[in-house]
Amino acid sequence: MKPISFWHRLLDLIAPRLCVVCGRRLTVTEEVICAKCNFHLPRTDFHRDAYDNEMARLFWGQIPIEKASALFYYEAHAESANIIYHLKYKNHPEIGEVMGRLMAKELQSAGFFDGIDGIVPVPLARKRLRQRGYNQSEEIARGVSEVTGLPVCQQVVCRKVFQGSQTSKGRWERNENVEHVFELVDPEAIKGQHLLIVDDVVTTGATILACAKQLLKAPDVRLSVLALGYTKS
Image (cartoon, rainbow, N blue to C red; front, top):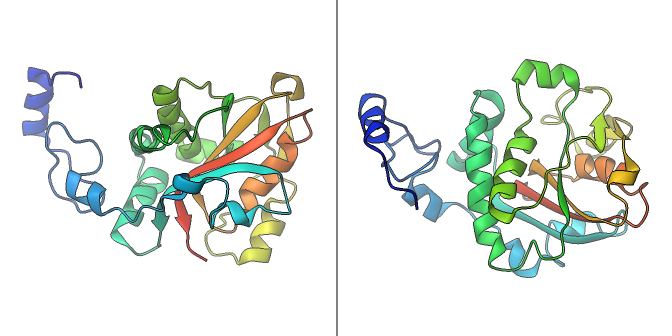
Protein backbone atom coordinates (compact mmCIF):
# COMPACT_ATOMS: atom_id res chain seq x y z
CA MET A 1 0.00 0.00 0.00
CA LYS A 2 1.30 3.46 -0.92
CA PRO A 3 2.11 5.79 2.01
CA ILE A 4 -0.47 8.51 2.61
CA SER A 5 1.02 11.90 1.79
CA PHE A 6 0.74 15.00 3.96
CA TRP A 7 -1.31 16.76 1.26
CA HIS A 8 -3.67 13.81 1.00
CA ARG A 9 -4.27 13.94 4.74
CA LEU A 10 -4.71 17.73 4.68
CA LEU A 11 -7.20 17.58 1.81
CA ASP A 12 -9.12 14.87 3.64
CA LEU A 13 -9.31 17.15 6.67
CA ILE A 14 -10.54 20.15 4.67
CA ALA A 15 -12.95 18.26 2.39
CA PRO A 16 -13.81 14.94 4.03
CA ARG A 17 -14.69 12.09 1.66
CA LEU A 18 -17.85 10.14 2.45
CA CYS A 19 -18.75 6.49 2.02
CA VAL A 20 -20.96 6.20 -1.05
CA VAL A 21 -23.11 3.59 0.70
CA CYS A 22 -23.73 4.90 4.22
CA GLY A 23 -22.53 8.52 3.98
CA ARG A 24 -20.09 8.26 6.88
CA ARG A 25 -16.67 9.85 6.69
CA LEU A 26 -13.96 7.71 5.11
CA THR A 27 -10.59 7.23 6.72
CA VAL A 28 -7.49 8.26 4.76
CA THR A 29 -6.89 4.64 3.74
CA GLU A 30 -10.46 3.99 2.50
CA GLU A 31 -11.74 4.71 -1.01
CA VAL A 32 -15.38 5.14 -2.07
CA ILE A 33 -16.74 2.61 0.44
CA CYS A 34 -15.97 2.26 4.15
CA ALA A 35 -14.67 -0.97 5.64
CA LYS A 36 -17.96 -1.67 7.43
CA CYS A 37 -20.08 -1.31 4.29
CA ASN A 38 -17.55 -3.33 2.31
CA PHE A 39 -17.80 -6.11 4.89
CA HIS A 40 -21.61 -6.10 4.72
CA LEU A 41 -21.85 -5.81 0.93
CA PRO A 42 -24.23 -8.59 -0.24
CA ARG A 43 -21.60 -10.51 -2.22
CA THR A 44 -22.73 -13.08 -4.75
CA ASP A 45 -19.61 -15.28 -4.49
CA PHE A 46 -20.36 -16.44 -8.05
CA HIS A 47 -16.63 -16.61 -8.75
CA ARG A 48 -16.40 -19.67 -6.52
CA ASP A 49 -18.21 -21.57 -9.29
CA ALA A 50 -17.89 -19.24 -12.26
CA TYR A 51 -19.02 -21.92 -14.72
CA ASP A 52 -22.35 -22.73 -13.07
CA ASN A 53 -24.15 -20.07 -11.06
CA GLU A 54 -27.36 -18.06 -11.22
CA MET A 55 -25.87 -15.39 -13.47
CA ALA A 56 -24.10 -17.81 -15.83
CA ARG A 57 -27.36 -19.70 -16.33
CA LEU A 58 -28.97 -16.55 -17.81
CA PHE A 59 -26.85 -17.12 -20.91
CA TRP A 60 -27.01 -20.91 -21.23
CA GLY A 61 -28.45 -21.99 -24.56
CA GLN A 62 -28.15 -18.47 -25.98
CA ILE A 63 -24.41 -17.83 -26.19
CA PRO A 64 -21.41 -20.01 -25.33
CA ILE A 65 -20.45 -18.61 -21.94
CA GLU A 66 -17.31 -19.74 -20.12
CA LYS A 67 -17.41 -17.84 -16.81
CA ALA A 68 -19.69 -15.29 -15.18
CA SER A 69 -19.56 -13.36 -11.92
CA ALA A 70 -20.74 -10.20 -10.19
CA LEU A 71 -19.45 -8.60 -7.01
CA PHE A 72 -22.74 -8.03 -5.20
CA TYR A 73 -26.49 -8.53 -5.45
CA TYR A 74 -28.10 -5.35 -6.70
CA GLU A 75 -31.44 -4.27 -5.21
CA ALA A 76 -32.79 -0.91 -6.38
CA HIS A 77 -33.64 0.63 -2.99
CA ALA A 78 -30.96 -0.99 -0.86
CA GLU A 79 -28.12 1.13 0.52
CA SER A 80 -25.60 -0.79 -1.57
CA ALA A 81 -27.43 0.40 -4.72
CA ASN A 82 -25.88 3.82 -4.05
CA ILE A 83 -22.67 2.45 -5.56
CA ILE A 84 -24.34 2.06 -8.97
CA TYR A 85 -26.54 5.16 -8.61
CA HIS A 86 -23.67 7.52 -7.85
CA LEU A 87 -21.47 5.92 -10.51
CA LYS A 88 -24.07 6.35 -13.27
CA TYR A 89 -26.02 9.45 -12.34
CA LYS A 90 -23.97 11.58 -9.92
CA ASN A 91 -20.81 12.17 -12.01
CA HIS A 92 -18.51 9.91 -10.03
CA PRO A 93 -16.54 7.85 -12.57
CA GLU A 94 -13.88 7.15 -9.92
CA ILE A 95 -16.36 4.80 -8.22
CA GLY A 96 -16.17 2.47 -11.20
CA GLU A 97 -12.39 2.31 -11.18
CA VAL A 98 -12.10 1.81 -7.42
CA MET A 99 -14.80 -0.87 -7.31
CA GLY A 100 -13.29 -2.52 -10.39
CA ARG A 101 -9.98 -2.84 -8.55
CA LEU A 102 -11.66 -4.15 -5.42
CA MET A 103 -13.62 -6.74 -7.40
CA ALA A 104 -10.60 -7.84 -9.44
CA LYS A 105 -8.47 -8.38 -6.32
CA GLU A 106 -11.12 -10.66 -4.83
CA LEU A 107 -11.71 -12.66 -8.02
CA GLN A 108 -8.06 -12.93 -9.02
CA SER A 109 -7.19 -15.19 -6.10
CA ALA A 110 -9.85 -17.67 -7.28
CA GLY A 111 -8.35 -17.80 -10.78
CA PHE A 112 -11.32 -16.09 -12.43
CA PHE A 113 -9.11 -14.21 -14.92
CA ASP A 114 -7.02 -17.22 -15.93
CA GLY A 115 -7.06 -17.71 -19.69
CA ILE A 116 -8.73 -14.37 -20.46
CA ASP A 117 -7.02 -12.24 -23.12
CA GLY A 118 -8.83 -8.91 -22.97
CA ILE A 119 -11.67 -6.87 -21.51
CA VAL A 120 -14.58 -5.44 -23.51
CA PRO A 121 -16.63 -2.83 -21.62
CA VAL A 122 -20.22 -2.61 -22.85
CA PRO A 123 -20.18 0.55 -25.00
CA LEU A 124 -22.48 3.54 -24.63
CA ALA A 125 -24.16 5.32 -27.51
CA ARG A 126 -22.56 8.65 -28.42
CA LYS A 127 -25.61 10.59 -27.20
CA ARG A 128 -25.51 9.00 -23.75
CA LEU A 129 -21.71 9.31 -23.60
CA ARG A 130 -22.01 13.06 -24.27
CA GLN A 131 -24.69 13.39 -21.59
CA ARG A 132 -22.78 11.45 -18.93
CA GLY A 133 -19.24 12.36 -19.95
CA TYR A 134 -17.91 8.85 -19.41
CA ASN A 135 -18.82 5.19 -19.83
CA GLN A 136 -19.33 3.60 -16.40
CA SER A 137 -18.53 0.12 -17.74
CA GLU A 138 -15.26 1.42 -19.13
CA GLU A 139 -14.35 2.86 -15.72
CA ILE A 140 -15.00 -0.53 -14.10
CA ALA A 141 -12.96 -2.23 -16.81
CA ARG A 142 -10.09 0.18 -16.20
CA GLY A 143 -10.00 -0.80 -12.52
CA VAL A 144 -10.03 -4.50 -13.41
CA SER A 145 -7.24 -3.90 -15.91
CA GLU A 146 -5.06 -2.17 -13.31
CA VAL A 147 -5.12 -5.27 -11.12
CA THR A 148 -4.98 -7.99 -13.77
CA GLY A 149 -2.87 -6.33 -16.45
CA LEU A 150 -5.43 -7.35 -19.08
CA PRO A 151 -5.88 -4.85 -21.94
CA VAL A 152 -9.16 -2.96 -22.34
CA CYS A 153 -10.47 -3.40 -25.91
CA GLN A 154 -12.41 -0.21 -26.59
CA GLN A 155 -12.81 -0.09 -30.36
CA VAL A 156 -13.94 -3.60 -31.32
CA VAL A 157 -17.69 -3.11 -30.85
CA CYS A 158 -19.79 0.05 -30.85
CA ARG A 159 -23.30 1.03 -29.86
CA LYS A 160 -25.05 2.44 -32.91
CA VAL A 161 -28.06 4.08 -31.24
CA PHE A 162 -29.41 4.91 -27.81
CA GLN A 163 -32.77 3.20 -27.32
CA GLY A 164 -33.57 4.60 -23.89
CA SER A 165 -32.93 3.32 -20.38
CA GLN A 166 -33.46 -0.33 -19.55
CA THR A 167 -34.35 0.42 -15.93
CA SER A 168 -38.17 0.39 -16.12
CA LYS A 169 -38.51 -2.29 -18.82
CA GLY A 170 -39.50 -5.94 -18.41
CA ARG A 171 -37.53 -8.93 -19.68
CA TRP A 172 -38.98 -9.02 -23.21
CA GLU A 173 -38.91 -5.23 -23.58
CA ARG A 174 -35.24 -5.23 -22.57
CA ASN A 175 -34.45 -7.84 -25.21
CA GLU A 176 -36.21 -5.87 -27.94
CA ASN A 177 -34.69 -2.60 -26.77
CA VAL A 178 -31.08 -3.69 -27.37
CA GLU A 179 -31.44 -6.42 -29.98
CA HIS A 180 -29.86 -4.49 -32.86
CA VAL A 181 -28.00 -1.63 -31.18
CA PHE A 182 -24.44 -3.05 -31.24
CA GLU A 183 -22.11 -3.49 -34.18
CA LEU A 184 -18.80 -5.33 -34.48
CA VAL A 185 -16.12 -2.89 -35.68
CA ASP A 186 -12.85 -4.83 -35.84
CA PRO A 187 -13.21 -8.64 -35.90
CA GLU A 188 -9.53 -9.15 -36.76
CA ALA A 189 -8.46 -7.50 -33.51
CA ILE A 190 -10.19 -10.13 -31.38
CA LYS A 191 -10.12 -13.35 -33.38
CA GLY A 192 -9.13 -16.38 -31.35
CA GLN A 193 -9.35 -14.47 -28.06
CA HIS A 194 -11.13 -15.14 -24.78
CA LEU A 195 -12.88 -11.85 -23.97
CA LEU A 196 -14.37 -10.63 -20.70
CA ILE A 197 -17.48 -8.47 -21.23
CA VAL A 198 -17.80 -5.95 -18.38
CA ASP A 199 -21.00 -4.10 -17.41
CA ASP A 200 -22.25 -2.25 -14.34
CA VAL A 201 -25.39 -4.32 -13.60
CA VAL A 202 -26.78 -7.52 -15.09
CA THR A 203 -30.54 -8.01 -14.73
CA THR A 204 -31.98 -10.09 -17.57
CA GLY A 205 -28.70 -10.28 -19.45
CA ALA A 206 -30.27 -8.67 -22.56
CA THR A 207 -27.55 -6.05 -23.04
CA ILE A 208 -24.75 -8.58 -22.56
CA LEU A 209 -26.43 -10.98 -25.01
CA ALA A 210 -26.78 -8.32 -27.70
CA CYS A 211 -23.15 -7.26 -27.32
CA ALA A 212 -21.92 -10.86 -27.16
CA LYS A 213 -23.69 -11.86 -30.38
CA GLN A 214 -21.70 -9.21 -32.22
CA LEU A 215 -18.40 -10.27 -30.67
CA LEU A 216 -19.10 -13.87 -31.65
CA LYS A 217 -19.08 -12.84 -35.32
CA ALA A 218 -15.28 -12.73 -35.01
CA PRO A 219 -13.58 -16.12 -35.57
CA ASP A 220 -12.98 -18.43 -32.58
CA VAL A 221 -13.97 -15.93 -29.88
CA ARG A 222 -14.74 -17.19 -26.37
CA LEU A 223 -16.67 -15.11 -23.84
CA SER A 224 -16.98 -14.55 -20.10
CA VAL A 225 -18.99 -11.90 -18.23
CA LEU A 226 -18.30 -9.71 -15.21
CA ALA A 227 -20.45 -7.02 -13.54
CA LEU A 228 -20.44 -5.02 -10.34
CA GLY A 229 -24.06 -5.85 -9.58
CA TYR A 230 -26.45 -8.68 -10.33
CA THR A 231 -30.20 -8.29 -9.88
CA LYS A 232 -31.82 -11.34 -8.31
CA SER A 233 -34.58 -12.82 -10.46
